[in-house]
Structure formats: structure tokens, C-alpha cells
Length: 440
Ligand code: UD1
Image (cartoon, rainbow, N blue to C red):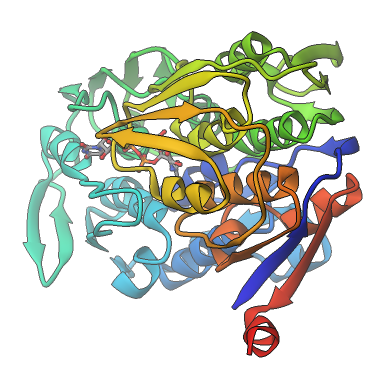
């Protein structure tokens, strides 16, 4: 397994291009199951989760074109076998988003068998809302050997009125599943309390290009008029707002200056407002499209503390909580971070404490008493975004930080070590067996 060795204390400076969004690309890829025609995607990031989804789609009879290997970022998917319906646990357990094949399979093939994803490091992560939504469309759902087995009624799914709100707001992948399923259902579907995330807007854009009739994506109320069939389409994946936000926080925590290209600044208002409140400059410097803008980050003279509460979009994203929390460890005063999407998502707190952060957790809330500096330490990454938070802390800390298990990071960031090094950070990727030898 790989680890990052980070010698902290260097200010980041330079330019970076934001890549295509993992969380948009995964449901876009699954949407290829809705048609026998080719779906061509551009700006697909090269990440472990994308490779797992590619493998899963191939197992479901929808392989990626071989020619794509020579064209980075391009992916052509085409269904060649509609008899395959089983998304196995071995794939879904490594990549939770595998569950978003459920809606497309059910809509197009009339049945699906998808392994229940189970919990993960950030909490229990149920899929009851996905299932409730699909049942409302007429699907019969049973649990067999840890798999969800879903069957559409004779004559296919039927449009319905569906409420997708749960105890923590709506569900992003649940909305993707129900939206995909509704495109081929008979009649009209109303999804109320739909997720408003920009990744849902991107999915609706692809589905519309395929011939779906969708209104209201990006709002809590989505209306879908079912159609008989969907056709081919070509689509460029939206830029990754979480990747962009992570590099913005990385610049801020090191007191650096950064220019971002292809930055979805319009989808980052909550982060930008928070960065500005702590004294970091966020300036749009160009680009006609606010989802693909040029943005400049300038350092705070002194980092001020902040109150941050994660919420569904357009609130502060839970996927940037660990990075923001790491930054607030160095603020001049006391900050409060409250997690309202995944209340257990604080595995980075204990690791940051090992680096000298002063953190006090009470349930879904962490009080951060800012310290003048962090000190490098060996730490363990436990999930994708927690790992990003630890890397950011390492960039700002004195001495050396070793972040182990960076395979979590590789699920969501394209070679983060290289990107950070290109901005002047001292980050090296090593095989952690070599670290053990050094430790001995
Ligand atoms: C997606 C993102 C993930 C992000 C999350 C919240 C992808 C691949 N992943 O995950 O990075 O952190 O949105 O922005 O896009 N819930 C239920 N019942 C359900 C489904 C969810 O109670 O059936 C709860 C969850 O436990 C959580 C909240 O709803 O507390 C939001 O989860 P959800 O939006 O479904 O997250 P994902 O779509 O899995």
C-alpha cells in the first residue's frame, strides 16, 4: 500500500486545472445502461472508483470501448448484452456508488440484483430512500443473500409521486436512481425533496440529451415525463467541485496563492463564503461559464475562526468538512464545525489531535481551539475526504507527516501527490513497506 511522506511548511503557489467530477461521472456512466445506443463522456477522471464502475458496467454487458485507452478522459460505453443484471458485492463494496446501477437496470431490463453496499468508514449509509422511490414506481423489492433483488411490474415501471426526504435531507444517489428509472416509466413522475446537488443537474443534462423529458433538476421538485426509449448522447462531465475546494483549502492552509482553471465556482458558494469569512481571498478572474471559471485564491493575513455546518447543497458540502476542519485548526480563535449530513464523519479528528490540533467532539459537533502550528506525525487515512484533510494538515505542519493508506485518496483525486508537488509542496509517494523498513 502507498503512503505520502509530506515535509510541511511550504506555501503552495501556481496554477491547477480542475478535472471532471467523480461524483458526477459515476451516475453518468450508469445511465449508459438505459439505452443500447452509445454514450460518450468527456473529461472522465482517471480514478480507482471510475475503474471499478467501468468493471461493473462491463460485467453488466455495457463495456467501455477499447479505443478510449488512447484518448485520456474520453469514455464510450455501449450496451451489448441486456441479460446481465447482477452487480456483485465484491465491486459494490469497494465503491458505494455502484448502487446507482439499480435504477437504470430496473428501468431498461425490468429487473436488477445489486449487492447492498453496507456501511463504510463515514457511517451506516442506508439505501432505504432509493428503495422506497423505486417501489413507488411499482418495483417489487426483496432482499436475498445480501443483495437487493428488484423486479419491475408487467408492462414496466409506472410514473408516481415520490417523496425522497430522509432524516438528513434528501439523497444524492437515491435521486439519481429514481430519476433514471422515471425516464423510462409510463406517465409522469414527480420527485419531491429531490437532491439539488449540481451532479444531479449534470445527470439530468445527459438524460435530456438522450431524449428524456425532465424539468426542475437542481430544485427540490423534479418532474419527469416518461418516454419509450432513450438514444445516443455525448456529454462533458462537470468539473469536480470537491477537488477544486480541496485545492482552495490547501492553498489557504499554507498561506499560498493559487490559480484554478475550469473551476465550478458557481457550485462552491458556501465554501467561498466561508473562506472569505476567515480572511482568504476568492476572486473570479475569468471564464464566461461560472461552472468553468478561472479563480484566484489569495492568503489570509491571519486565519480567523469560523462556524461551519455541513448541509445538503447549496449548504456547505460534507465532502469538504475534513479539509475545512484541518484549516481551522490553525485559526486565531475557536471554531465550531457541525456535521448534519453524516454525523459520524469525524475519523480525522483523532489523527489531527496527534498532530497537535486541539479538538473537542460532542456528537456531530467539533469545537476547534486554534493553535499557532501543527507538528508532523504518522497518521492513518480512513476515508477519502478524511485523508484529504490529513494531507492538508501535513502541508502546513512543521517536520514530516506520513499519511498511510492513500488508496482512499486515489479513489477521488487524480495523483494528488503530483498535483501538490507541481504547486511546490514536498510530497512523495512511497510504498509503505519501505516505511516499515525505515521504522525498524
Ligand atoms: C453522495 C456522494 C458523497 C457525499 C454525499 C452527501 C457520490 C458518489 N457520493 O453520497 O460523496 O458525501 O452524497 O453529499 O455521489 N440516507 C438515508 N437513506 C438513504 C440514503 C441516504 O437515510 O436511502 C442518508 C445518509 O445516511 C446520509 C444522508 O442521507 O446521512 C445523505 O446521503 P446521500 O445523499 O444518499 O449520500 P450518497 O448519495 O450515498
